[in-house]
Amino acid sequence: MVKTSQALSHEMDIEEDWIERASGVYSRYYVDFNNGENALLLGTQAANLAVKDSNIKLEDIDCIIGACGSPLQAIPCNASLFQRELGLENSGVSCFDVDTTCYSFPLAVFIAPTLIQLNVYNKILIISSDAPSPTLETAEREVRALFGDGAAAVVVSKTPEGEKSKVHHFKLNTYSNGADLTSIKGAGTLRHPNHSETKPEDNVFQMDGKKVYKLALKYLKPFLKELERESKIINSNYKYIVPHQTSKNGMKIFYKHGFAVDRVANHLTNHGNCIAASIPMVLHDYIKEEKIKRGDKILLFGTSAGLSLGALSLTY
Amino acid sequence: MVKTSQALSHEMDIEEDWIERASGVYSRYYVDFNNGENALLLGTQAANLAVKDSNIKLEDIDCIIGACGSPLQAIPCNASLFQRELGLENSGVSCFDVDTTCYSFPLAVFIAPTLIQLNVYNKILIISSDAPSPTLETAEREVRALFGDGAAAVVVSKTPEGEKSKVHHFKLNTYSNGADLTSIKGAGTLRHPNHSETKPEDNVFQMDGKKVYKLALKYLKPFLKELERESKIINSNYKYIVPHQTSKNGMKIFYKHGFAVDRVANHLTNHGNCIAASIPMVLHDYIKEEKIKRGDKILLFGTSAGLSLGALSLTY
Image 1 (cartoon, each protein chain N blue to C red):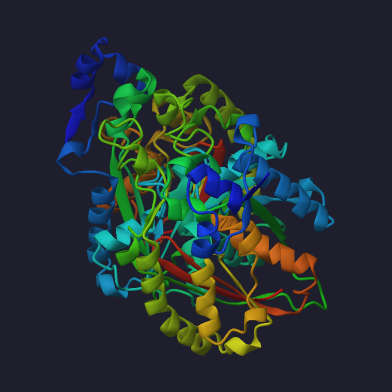
Image 2 (cartoon, each protein chain N blue to C red):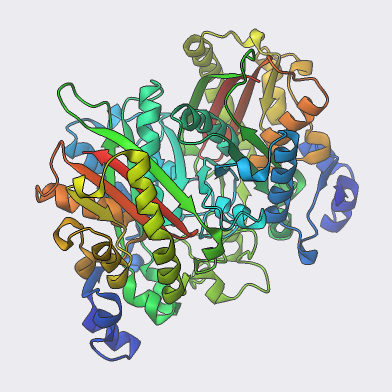
């Protein structure tokens, strides 16, 4: 369901326009958690649509990679739970997750073709799904203002003859001096949910938005320069940069670094930040709107908790 | 610290020899959680030893893969937290996790060389660390009897000239009809720690040992047959099978399937089941004891929550 910032501001008992001003988000989608909607359902629906759009059958999939920003449950991996929801529970189809929080999707898109080239798999289903909304009520207002629920999925297979689809370059730089700036400190073995000293706030996302912004800004310029040098593709050659939808200010960074506003894929205003699902969701929208077409060079860029900066340069 | 099954049986108020009979575990190691020991510390120590054993410097590492069975905290990824503990917090070294629970280590060992071949990285540090002990007090007795804490790490780099190290084949079959048989249902967005309906038992590992055993047994025979056919390596050609240390009965399965007792790497009796750390820990022991030497063919085999069966065939 759509949750407008206006409605949310009433629930949060804050000024009506504070959320829009602070985050740039006018509305986002929330699952109806108490009626059985959650990240598992969203991811499964996205996966079914991706398979349909690829003109293949579910049975053609031979690997499922979970590329989410948050676990559905601690054990087993998300991919395995998606496999069951898809009705493939007796198939033996390989299931595993990759995780670098908000940048998990491009990481999976980078790994998948290498496994296809090695003839380990033919058709890999990548699912990114995050539904933080049921936990947001207890989060800080900056966090609550920003996040939404969403999912997207893709099928990766061999490039058909005559097409140019290709991964050009992958780059992931992690600076864990920023590990505490965006984190959920609980829900693992360090601050276990059952431990007497674990507090409820340990179990929700915490963010020092200003410090993250400052740190990301510090690393971004050399990162983009190195990327150009290593990939031998100058940034102006990308039709679109498809960035993680961090926040209004997070998106503005790119405009300062040589990406024209109309070349930065953006749907923050009506989706918010959907963690790992953001990049594939915007990508999906831009493909559906035919802004991104086969043969276009695009750059999947993201900052993520870690703190990581990631870039995947590819021809769609 | 060492926790003997005898001491544990007194704490659990059960017959002195029940644990040995049921699990095959005589002792296991527990972290001293209240004095700052945990999976983060164990993994960091293992990583430092792996780097030292590899005769390289920490600064030579250009990627860290977390390959644990349980998260240290929900966000960011384990690898990022290890990076910080290793003092590499300003290095920019890539950090991400891979997860298929107990089989995460071989999955990482399979992915790492493909990234090195692509010249993305030179030296990849893989860390597997799990310390479930602080959560076991509230777990069922079958679970409590079985698990221990542990960590191991390896450095993957290009095969030196004249050596034969090579990955031959990777196989991972997931049957999510067994997803509920070994699980932690909580600690994610489906049963969030702060949700009023989440129970303490949702946050600990639950296992239906008999059903897992039965299901694994059903899938094992065809799995091993397919593995032989696909890899073109007959099982008798492996010097050792290095299996996940599931349980006494779990280890016996291999004897029934043509692996002689002395070719099945085993340290269950004095380590228990250390989740994702088990396979690299036994591997480490067998390398240190010179049972496994450069040029030996080995098979890293594991059943894991999912339910998955995995095999990585390689020359060490």
